[in-house]
Image: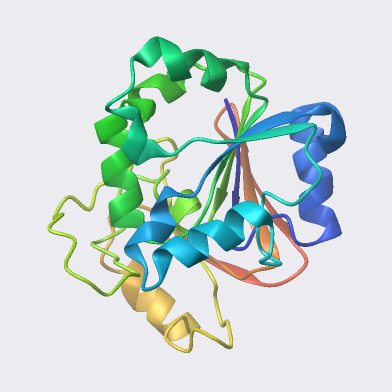
Length: 223
């Protein structure tokens, strides 16, 4: 499985071109499943999830003109026989894992069984993360909880799909706490390299090879 880990989706030409490169065909000829689950842990999460799915947010991955697009709601999968949804996941060209709270997302990726399924997916399928969807691919995110609420979840380990952590939305005007200084302090708590990336930056991972795609700015912090 190939990975495209973004801070805010495919919102510039470089990132969109990289997505097409990873898919091996135009987006308009590709099928995708969108995963909005992380949004529900945010204040007003139901509205956020709906706007993500509808492509109302400029940062949404879902409004890119896919040939087919389905919603894979992780919280529903535990009550559905696996054969009902596993085949859909295997057939999809891309999984679009949107933002929200990474603790909540990581929890449900494990609970529903998708985390265990990911390593067995086709080598040409693409995992596309946005914010929390990118953060959960690392080994850990140091208890980061963007929802600011008690989720009653204390497992801050990620999926370990990559061997680095991601600090998204670097220097974003709506997130003053996401300064470079705070990114460095956050990275200092982690035992792995940390990429702090802004909303014009993404990280491409293919067969363990890591490449930063950026029309903005980013910084790598080593432990």
